[in-house]
Amino acid sequence: MIIVLKNGTTKQEAENFSNILTEKYGVQVNAWHGAMSTVLGLLGDTHKVDIESIGAYELVESVKRVQEPYKKVNRAFHPNNTVIELENGIKIGDGSLNIIAGPCSVESEAQIIQVAKAVKESGATLLRGGAFKPRTSPYAFQGLHADGIELLLKAKKETGLPIVTEIMSAEHIDLFKDVDIIQVGARNMQNFELLKSLGKLDKPILLKRGLANTIEETLMSAEYIMSEGNEKVILCERGIRTFETYTRNTLDVSAVAIFKKLSHLPVIVDPSHAAGIPWLVEPLSISSLGVGADALIIEVHNDPPHALSDGAQSLTPDRFDMIAKRIFAAKSALDSALK
Image 1 (cartoon, one colour):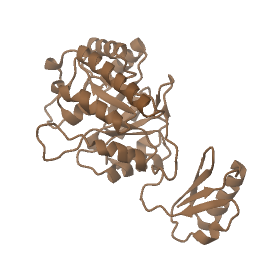
Image 2 (cartoon, rainbow, N blue to C red; image 1 turned 135 degrees about the horizontal axis):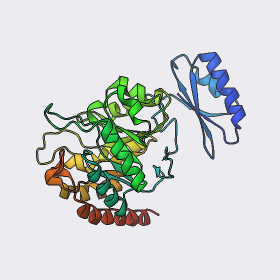
Image 3 (cartoon, helix red, strand yellow; image 1 turned 45 degrees about the vertical axis):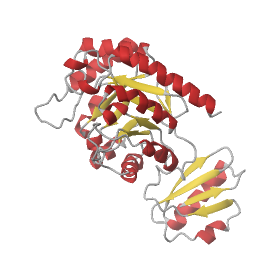
Image 4 (tube, rainbow, N blue to C red; image 1 turned 60 degrees about the vertical axis):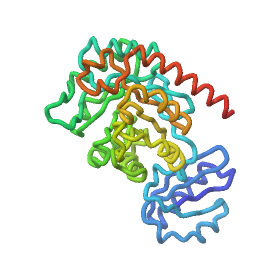
């Protein structure tokens, strides 16, 4: 349930009213204070809440029930976009464009530092790299685990780039204490125990949409994290499995616009995993900007033919440099056209 308070309502008045609602109906009340109004979101069993009784209060502008099962994720509860700010001042969701770039897997110190320096020079603002790798085959390279995180931290120290890497188990959380953004991969999108554990952290979580999951299921997974107290969630559209075989997956660009409409959370697009084809990264990236993507996550490897995972879809640093220039130019042109 959403209650919009009249313009001019003070924070103290909103707090007093929230306490009345909690005591009377046993609901949790989340408040959002905007420039023109205050919005109260009622969480819990609201079917006994009397809309007419609430509407009779002088400070209430309007009351409406929200049918969607996700509440904290819902834009109706939080009209303004959420902006995720990292320690170094980088912001995701504020209208700027961030590119997260790096190899699928961390393979060696020389490799990750070489790639990190290259992508930073080309304009990337964050470094990605897999230390724990969920692979379809049990015989494929599974990552360097804790050693991989240590190498990412060395690359961060060398370049200043914040790091993004994937977690696969709540048992590993302590290893991620110095990671800037923890990624939940597509295969773990509905690992609810992991999501609840991550919800207890004060750290940004990048949540990838599952290979065959709906938009609502993705938002509900974000709700799992936020319901535990962590509101620093970033959604990622990385392509879904369809009948099409030309590409590795099918990038659902419509999902980006829908996520932005239904939710206040930032949205990232992963064109590398969506396509699985290097030449498609550029057009998919630019089209993603057109539907509102806040950032892109792109795989870059210094020697794709010899990569230990996903080399076929990785860009070389030189190719990434050329594409990044075009992506930033497209972003600038789009911003100018929409002014």
